[in-house]
Image (cartoon, rainbow, N blue to C red; front, side):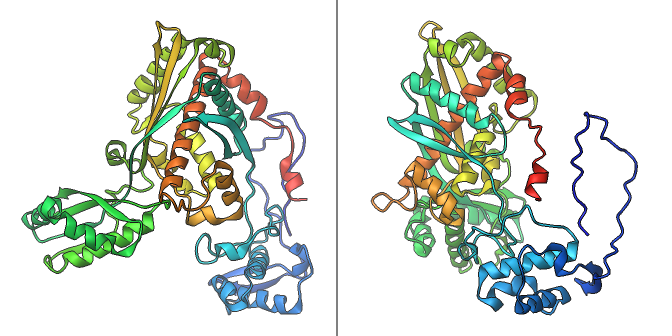
Amino acid sequence: MILKDDARKVPCGAGLDCSIPQIAPIASPKAVAQKVFDKEVVISTPTDFSTQPLSEEDEDVIKAVLSGTIPSYSLESKLGDCKRAAAIRREALQRITGKSLGGLPLEGFDYESILGQCCEMPVGYIQIPVGIAGPLMLDGREFSVPMATTEGCLVASTNRGCKAINLSGGASSVLLRDGMTRAPCVRFNSAKRAAELKFFLEDPNNYDTLATVFNRSSRFGRLQTIKCAIAGKNLYMRFTCSTGDAMGMNMVSKGVQNVLDFLQNDFADMDVIGISGNYCSDKKPAAVNWIEGRGKSVVCEAVIKGDVVRKVLKTNVEALCELNMLKNLTGSAMAGALGGFNAHASNIVSAIYIATGQDPAQNVESSHCITMMEPINDGKDLHVSVTMPSIEVGTVGGGTQLASQSACLNLLGVKGANRESPGANARLLATVVAGSVLAGELSLMSAISAGQLVRSHMKYNRSSKDVSAVASA
C-alpha cells in the first residue's frame, strides 16, 4: 500500500500535528514476504505499482532481483537492454520499499548514453527546468546563458544584470591560468628522505624528464608545474597540467601515475599512500585553490553607467560600493570566509554547471570569488569585477555528452572539442561562467541595496500550488 501525501488546503499552522504518526498496516492479501539483502521485507505485488503491463519474462527477472538471484547492478549486462534494465530495477525497488516512483520519469531518456560512465543502477531521471539569462555581452560577443535551477528569481535576476552590462557596453574577461591539479601523498621513513624527493621534483634540471614521463598518457595533458609540501616524513606533490577541452581530472591522474611509477626506480623506499592526498584540492574549499588556482582562473569586469545603475538596477553607485565593502568584504572576513567574498556566485555557477553537464560537486571551489565595486569617473559610474581563481569546466567527457547538456553547450557555441585550438571551448565556457556571475552579483547586490530582496522572493520564489499531487498522479 502506498501512503499518499497529505495535500489538504488548511491555514498555515492549522495543519501542523506534533503527535507521533500512526504507521498504516500493510494488509494486502497479495503481499508476500521474502528475504532481500539479508532482511525480511514485505514485497508488494505488481498490481500495486506497475504503470504498464509486465511481460511474463520481465516478471521472472523482477522476482530474481527480489530474491537476490540476479544482482540489481548486473541487469544491463544480463539483459543487453539499458532501458528495460532500468524499468525492471525500478519495479523491483517499488516492491521492496512499498513506495511509488510515479513522479520520477522513466520514459524519454537514453539510458545507453550513461552506461559505464555517468550513473550506475538508474531507475529514472530528474527533471530540472532550464531558463535563459541574457543576452550577455562579453568580450564583444553575445551569449544566451542556460541556467538549470529550481530557485525562483535567480534567472530573472541574472537576466537583469546582463541587461545592465549590455546597456553599459558589455563586460570583458581575462584568463589568468589554465591548469588542472592532482596531488598524491607519499611517505618515507624520514623527513630528510621526503625532502630529497621534494628537491628532485622542484629542480628545473629534472623538469624535461618528468614532463616527458607525465605527458605519455594523453595528447592534450601537458605538465606545467610541480609544487611540493612536506608534513613530517610525508610529501604532497601538486601536479598542474593543461587538459585541452576536458575538465581533466582523469587526464592529470594518469600523468601523475606515470610519474609515480617512474620515481620508484630511484626512490624505491617511497610508499605511495594515495593518488590524491587532498592537496589538489578537489571538491573542498581550500586556500591552495584560492591562492594558486585550479582549472581556469578568470577575472571579469565591467563599467556600469550611473544612469543604468539608477534606472535598471534601481539603486546608486555610492550605496552599491558601501554595501559591497560591508557585506562581501568586511562581512565575509568576519565570517572567516575562504573564497566567499561575494554575494551568491555559487548560485550562478551551480545553475550553469547543471545545465551544461559539469560536475556539480566542483561548485565548491569553482564558486571561489571576490567581488569588487568602486566608483569611477568622479563617482558617476561603477566599476565592478569578479575574480574567480578555480573555475573547473570542460566541454567533453562526463555529463557534457548527454543530449540535454550537449544542447546547452551548443547554445553557447562551445559544444565538444575545439579542433583548431584545443582547450579554447573550455576556456570560453569558463569566461561565460565568470561573466554570468558578474551579472548575478550586480543584480542581487542592487536588490539588497534597494531593499527589494525579500519582496522579490516572496513574489517569485513561493508557490501555493500542490505540485506533489500533480507529480504523483
